[in-house]
Length: 270
Ligand SMILES: C[S@@+](CC[C@H](N)C(=O)[O-])C[C@H]1O[C@@H](n2cnc3c(N)ncnc32)[C@H](O)[C@@H]1O
Image (cartoon, rainbow, N blue to C red):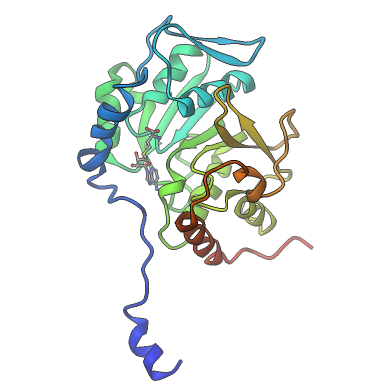
C-alpha cells in the first residue's frame, strides 16, 4: 500500500444501516405507523375484518384495506398454510397479530433487535406479549431463536448495509426456516437473488435444495419466495427479471452492488 493509501485507509468509507435502530421507534417508526399506515390502511385487524379465500388465494377485507405489502404477507401464509410462521424484524408486531387473527390455527411469532420495538409490539398487542422476542438477526446463529416452517421479513434486510451483516441475516433466516423463506423487501436495495444463490453455493445456506420463486400478491406487489421443494409459482432467474417494471433507482442499485462486492463466499461444493 503506498503512503497516500495508508494515510487515507483510516478514514475509509464505513457502511451503515439506514437507521440508528436504538432510537428508531421514537425517531421514526412510531410516527410513520401513525401517519402513513393508520391514516390510510387497516393496521390492526380484529376478528371478522379479514378473510382468506382458499379458492382464489386472496385476502378479502371487509371495510378498510390493508397496505398491499401487508396483504401480500397474509396471502403467502394463506396459500402455503405452514404450521408456524416467524417474522424477523417484526417492529410494532401488527403482521404477527393480523396473521393470528386470519389464521388462528397457525403459530405466529416475531422477533426484533430493538427493545423499544418489542415494547411497542407488546403495547399494541398485549394478548400476544409472549409471541414477541428480542433477537438481532445479524448476530451469529443462536439455537435458542424461534424456528418456524415459514420465516419472513418485511422492510428489514433492505435497510441493513453494515459490512456483511445482511448476508448473515439472510443466512440466519434460512437456518431458522424449516420450509420457506419469504422476503417482502425493496427489491433494488440488495441483489437478493444472486446473493441468495451465492450463499447457497458457498454453503452458508444449509438447505440441500433451494428454489427461488416470485410471489405476486393480489395487489401486484412482488416478493421473493424461497423453498426447499419446487412450488407452483414462477421461478426467478435473476435480480434484473425481478426488477422488471420497477422505477429504476441508480443510488439503490449502486449501493446494492457495493454490498454484494463485500461478500466472500465459501467454496462451492465439488
Ligand atoms: C422498517 S422497520 C419494519 C418493521 C416491521 N417489519 C413492519 O413492517 O412494520 C425495520 C425493522 O427491522 C428491525 N431490525 C433492523 N435490524 C435488525 C436486525 N439485525 N435483527 C432484527 N431486527 C432488525 C428494526 O428494529 C425495525 O423494527
